[in-house]
Image (cartoon, rainbow, N blue to C red; front, side, top):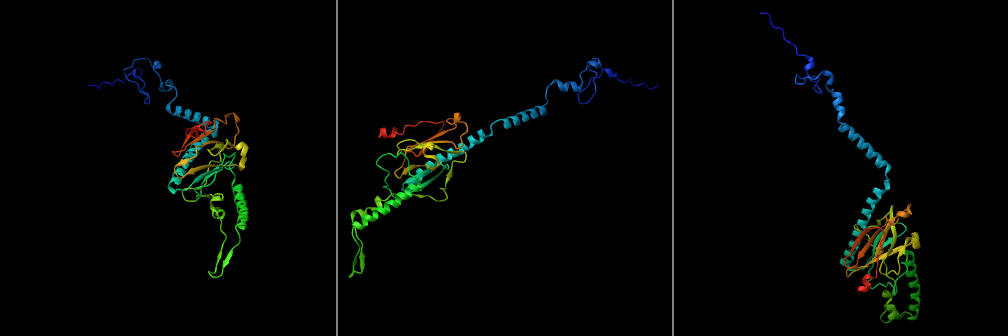
Length: 292
């Protein structure tokens, strides 16, 4: 018997399989009606890789076009304000634990602030509220003037007397001389330890204005200038002055957005906490005075 010739399948009865290029006998459509692999790939629109590339390019263009200072400014503001609120609470705790008065000193010019303390528990702040706080140079001048004036009281008290029998020198005494330590201006010294170093609000931020209870009015950068200093006092019995502090960009370019880019910090006297809010907020510091 002659071997039957093996019948070759009709190539027109095979369907193209994407990626392989074969056709199955289950699709009897003419070959020109069968969609090619290239056509099928294009019917779904962009591929996943193409979409990722397009999105990445769009995101890069947005980052380049958007103002670069906005994100960095908000991030730095958050860090600085959180640090300031924490420092106010830490100064409050330090004052209570040490039983010594403390104060935070804010320098308008540099945006720096630091903690100071004194051994005097009865320091004199004045009969009336201050229009402004004295600068460190003015404090030194006042101390020097006090020492010079007090020399006159020493002369009025008399001269030293030498006791030959006891071989001692008796210095003049008077109630006024005995009260010198209490009459002299309090000496404040910066707290220098591992926990307390000079803090920096800058370079992007600084103190725009501030008012504490001992101030007669709002202390502003416009009035005091770069030479201005403002103090916030803490007392050993667990009290910090009620105060409002406005933190704003140090270099103001957009005057219209100045208030929006200002942050307000308000102290809580008996808790030693600081409440932070965005925007310029006016605060009535006489609230606690009226309550007392």
